[in-house]
Image (cartoon, rainbow, N blue to C red; front, top):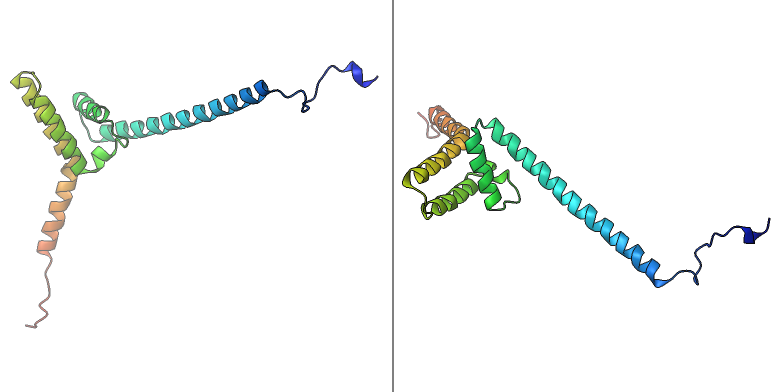
Length: 151
């Protein structure tokens, strides 16, 4: 057997042309883009799944869950959980929604129902925080303090 029987050409500097190099970099760039977009979409999916789970634990009905999800989607919140964790962010988004719905051509009944729904969502979402604050205030008011001046 001599070496000419195998028709396999190893990569040599003369056999390497520009199209192979260009295709190699195109494939590597495409793989990087697919990985980046895929990881972004996966993180977004996980955040949305956590948000849906938290909405279910609040005991909201399906219409209220839909309203809250629409607010998050409409204002393109990167962290959907922040609307549930921060009373200030929720109030800001709810205010924007109220302005939007009040300036819409919808009937007064629809506007009233929607705004009432926003208030109900807020009450259910942050009610436990208000109760905990009221309990801590009541507990501190009932705690006897010592008189440092003496009796």
